Length: 461
Image (cartoon, rainbow, N blue to C red; front, top):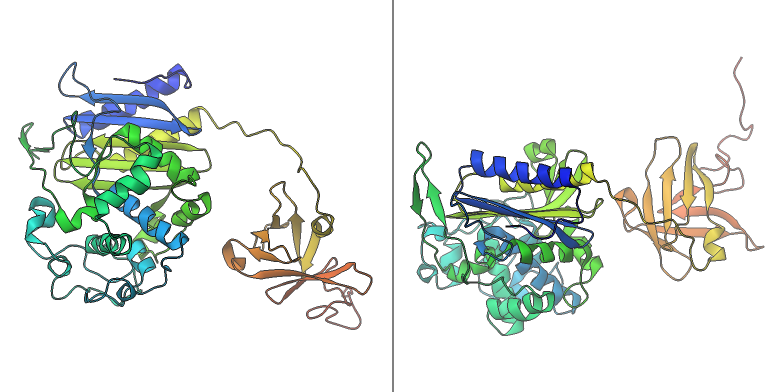
């Protein structure tokens, strides 16, 4: 029922077991299996089941529903990184004639294309994909529900279009491309489009009685890129490590990090709840942590994958019931238990290997008007701008190789930081998107807003 627990304390292991036991009992699910990852490896697996002695382990397949979308998104980003497409391309450029071609690829990834949440009746999750052999059958006569790009509206048909995009540009079925480009390189040998033994059966649990009924497992056909996959907690644990850190055989760390960034405008309720959506990843603020991941459901199954990047902890929870335990919340709780009980020990501080003297010259205190800032030079070679008095906009910057720096986050994301030098080569001031930063507040020798008043600073009697 469990893998090695050597890396976690006994109290932590018991707290994890207690959480999934409560989830299985209160959620009235036939079985529930979970795995926790820390520092890039699985450190705990636990399971609860209604059949004594037959608990699932990390190698038993469950259907993972919409976590499939994250796999599809990785295939699309690979095409982008190869220069085959741009995320700003309209779908029509690559897959013509869909009737939804004005939507861009990034909008499909972030569910901002305005497309319907579901395909036309009958309900695609409970009927054979053979009923929807063409994209037109998935989209219907009126595919849009909202203006393109105006709001976040989760769309399963949107990911069918992304699957068709992958097939068009790769010249092979989505399932084949997925296996070749993601599953095999990452060693996800227990992830597949169709169930492979051992696998759990899907069940519906009666809402008012402790009785069950088996759920059918339909082949979703064209809708497969939105929710077809079966997997295990062992494979999804490895996939979580990839989603956290990247793997150059599949997708770089930089591109994976792009998936974590909010890409869709949240609704008011979502904003209040601290949730948003990136490129095929949900982003949730919970218990003071920022979590990324995805949930999934299909008749008979529930799935959740959650990653805490700061603490380098992830959790996967799989269950075989149509409705029951809140598996995404359970996964988030498993992450919290480990992060709180055994806080991450930071890596030892070490100095940079080489010091760039021109960058070192920029370090220290600066002022934008009267607001004080500090500019630090960390070992990774970038720059970090931080407000010193608790007010102001901060950002990290990367070097461009020509003496300038580009902002990476917040207000200054994409903005250019340029050091301006005096005739003797010393730094006069910094220009950050036209904002002037000086060594003294309102330096009279600097451009606007320097030397605002010729009489300078004064008191008032």
